[in-house]
Image 1 (spheres, helix red, strand yellow):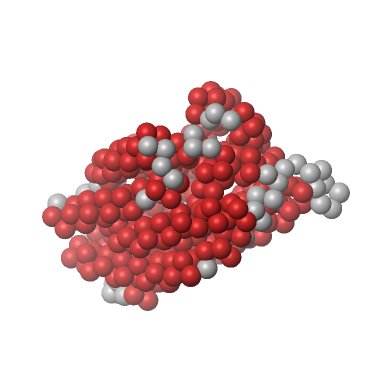
Image 2: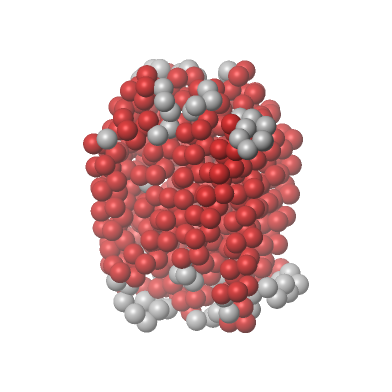
Length: 444
């Protein structure tokens, strides 16, 4: 942490996360492309089921974000021995949390499905998917902990390698299990769920083997599995609870977005699913550079280099926005070929084109907004980040409800909510980092 945080350093941290995120999105693309050739009901149902699954796993993701902040801070302080203890306590907590989330998703999600979804066909697809996919909650939580460790110490290459490995397995198994190839039964929606479950487990095995072989365990005191230090656990939970709630709110809002869209009909829902898949690809740099901003903010504060935080954030924003512009130009110039990857229904493709233009415009503003928003959590002020997120989400959901439910507008009008979110989160986050006191925020 003695070197200047240059564009090259930022890029070297973000690039493996970008590659990993691309591979992760390949899983979404594959599920969408294959199921789009099964039926629109399967396509829309798995979209909602996948979102509901992610909403639940986001609590574990949020906890891992807290761990990432702590690991980065210890790394900046050169207090490496404490990293292993924090990692293991995060594992303990995540496994306990996984039990609770599994019970809720496996045995109680039907109540939520019946409440929010009108179509009986879509309800059936959602239930079939979650019946299998819910077992992955334990695996996903542990994978998030490994990811937080490697981002926190800015050794991110393994994340890209692991996710690419997982994506390859998922693509192969999707083809076999959804369509019934190589002697396997044609499982449709359930095949997509089983493929993702197996792929996640393979990624976990990769993480474990890589860590045992490549990481100097003694340097970080990893895998000592010491008895629980309740004071350390309390500090981890304190820093992580706001990020857990924030992640849950964020993905919960995303799930509600799609349930509002479902009320417009099965065609808008199917369209929104393929638009969302492209949107996630366009947004890959946003979250990769956001993770870099989060980690580097925490590391710089740990190294007592607070004055370098704002210049670093501007450099991250510039890189993020430049990547976004490149991707959006490609998507805007070739919307029909891009959408045709997901479905061979040309009516659905042309129905979705205007929404692609809308989300491409919105994406440009996220490079700045998410960089500064992630920096707030990186300072350790995770409760303040939660408050900002909650306020912005309230405006976002009111906007979506007004146009989707009250006015029953065209789907591309509903998607303009993303621009509203990007502008609000960017303005609020920059104002906080520029004018509020955040130095010395984390004593975990």
